[in-house]
Image (cartoon, rainbow, N blue to C red; front, side, top):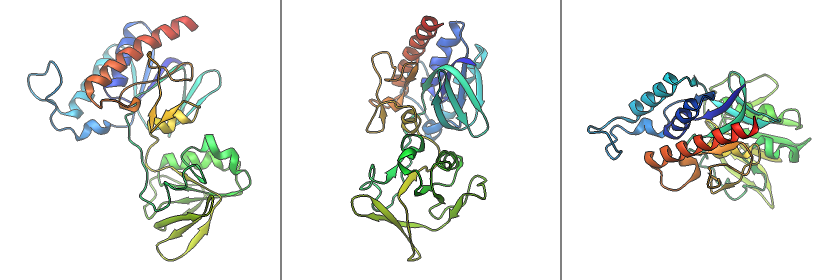
Length: 286
């Protein structure tokens, strides 16, 4: 077990790791890729760089700096977050435990363009199997997605529901699906129903009835992970206090996922602040 797991290897997460390592604590950074910074060919508005630097280079340099100070870095995709007295962070390959967690994964929210999706959110359409699976005990549900995150959500639901169908929405599978999960490759046209979602129309003219529809496109976003253990969310931003801590003790968030100005400078400040507050939290509770 480590002192803190940092989900995200961008400026916010790595800045926190640098402070935590220099305080003599142990941090584990889990990052899938360079995120939105991968699209930044030249960064010219950040203090201290005479010449522009690419987003990829900035991220890789930050990770190397944190590793030099003793931080552990793992390239993997986080699919779940739980709490049983300690925090449990699940990836597609294994699980890790820690005393605290910092979410610093940016703001990517994967919502497919499906007619009726927004109208039925909270009325049959959900984004969190851990949060809402209980309400669909013994019922027929669907998970929309084709990746490891979709598989993770499906596995959370399987022990509860009557039947489960994975809807790839016309996409190929990017993970291995167990035979007990039905897979439907048809393109989704719309979600229909009355007071709640009742069925899905496909592009071939067919339809299927479902009591619940869980959206799990691509990778788990920051708000997806935070919701899994009851952290407060507003407009897909994680709500934090002045110390960057959520309403869940020991769970912190920093960077774009907290909203506001989406800039590297803001992410580094919040990561540094979160790092110092995590140090205080660990020392207080040891």
